[in-house]
Image (cartoon, rainbow, N blue to C red; front, side, top):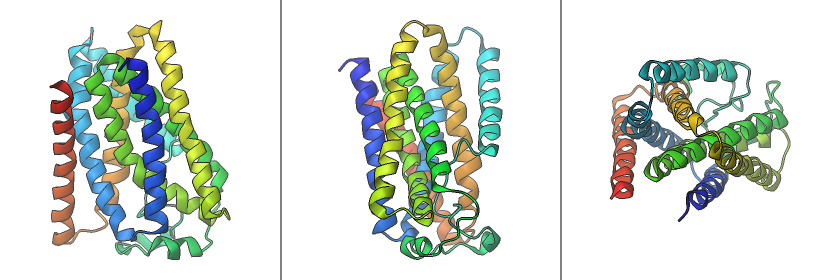
Length: 271
């Protein structure tokens, strides 16, 4: 397969898998399954960062200090973007569809159908969520393309890690759209349309980076910052809502499974 084919396949699969998976979970499965996805996603993201992306970024860097500064600047950038509500990672236990006054005691999340039935839109329209999600998917497509241009193995690992965290995010987006008055069919169609931005970002980045190869390492550093920020700032705090021993053991096990999966994928891709 050519690099372009890999990018196209990864971005299309990323969009379809995340949206279909989110739709199945939000409309049919128990909400208790979503924290499982989140724990696995944390492991996949951290595994991708520390096993693949970070070593590659440093190994191919002409200036380690600049690369480190880019990662640090990326963390600050994503913090600012999230503050501006342009970058939105929403999952079932920390979603605007829930009452913000419920607090840490909100460990036992109600079923999606029940959540969707309560029309509390807290000032955030479904259209704003779609705009933020479209931007997010576009950037993910750019990062996937940069990873594949750097190394096929790195691209595969990056794509898997991005898909892993997309599913719980899309569940939250799906529920918010239902809150905003959209039907399940409309919410599914709009989420699928938004996910197409990942393909657009990947294709545009592929052609743009052909003439700007010097930007590939910078984008890899930003991908590192993006995944690290999502795992540490967005997903892990939600896991602390369930401090009981049984839940903690489950979370640690699934995080380890996510890391192991990334390691295994990397080994297989390298082989």
